[in-house]
Image 1: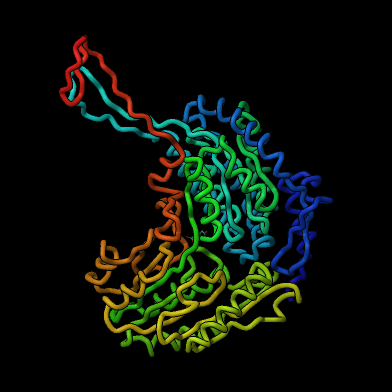
Image 2: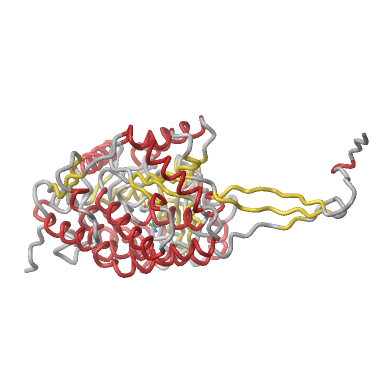
Length: 507
Ligand code: UN1
């Protein structure tokens, strides 16, 4: 028997250890709950929408100073943040488990993802390269320079409560910006913890402006105040497509920039030549990992008719036997759903799938894994005759819809026939199939993989997707460019003034 963990006591221990002031999370007006037990674990002081202007003005002043700090020196702050995160990894990872319900290894993995992006951003701080461009005029030089943008607003979701902030904050800070963060109402404690960790890095750094990073605790009204504020140059928003439909037009209206990383309805294709043992493991992690609550979770699976009767029974076995339980007390692979609304949404989708002819394995509530107020479920595998109804929507829960296919043309068409376009995979040992999947006529997603699952991307690549996923890119590759503004500079070092395009204008 493992010892029973009191989530409230454990959260308090961690918050104290990470240096989060008790006044921020006790006696306040917003309750925070742990999905592990469904209990209230803290009462946070909220930011009022009317205060947001002041906070953003302070961030704007901080930006005014920070933009003049040389980028490699800005990188030093992020290097220190990475060091502080290494020192706090166990505590912050456990707080992620308490507040988001992730299993231990995934809570720690999320903090590792933060450390990784810090390392990446430190290197980047010496590589904010612009081009030198050939000019058509003699005695001239043309180049581009990348400048800091301003105040960057970050909106993050409960399911990656800390990593998504760090993808944005680490890049925004080395790029010379100030950040203001509106975390999910479901995971405010981990946000306070990150701010405390960054505050320690700032103290070690020495002369950085204090308001370089701030957190807004509250409901959508504070988020809206941030989105509408004219001094917020860019908002990077991660969450549902519904949220993106609110945020995107508001930003467009004032010509502010956005990075939108919204819903996914990710699919995999299992081809006749696939290594089925490998595919089985990748599918299990992709579909059941994080209790199906990643934006990259595998939600649809197209299995070739020649391997369907081999793979699908094995998958069903894995679904029936996967361990489900309290992530703080057991070594279970599947933790709880975030709340009752998530559970209800899952049941509704399963009902619709059944009505559409689906055959369901799993999906029931596992009552003895937690308290009555926690929502643990057995992940559901649903065999569907065709791709219809709930299969076309993202339900943020562990439901995998499985369908048969006959030809790759047909599978590709079905694969791309949904409104989201985040992540995708193909399982095949046939290079023609693999390359076709990655080609212009293949997967229409921002992430397309071969012989690995849809989830668990590394930070080095650009992360994001197409269509209703929003089109934004965060994290690696050249995603940093979205956090800076580009100036094209032409310098004339000659004694003449030739005009471009051969225009003459002699006065
Ligand atoms: C998310 O679910 O919002 O690729 C982010 C992954 C993680 C990030 C997921 N590295 O699954």
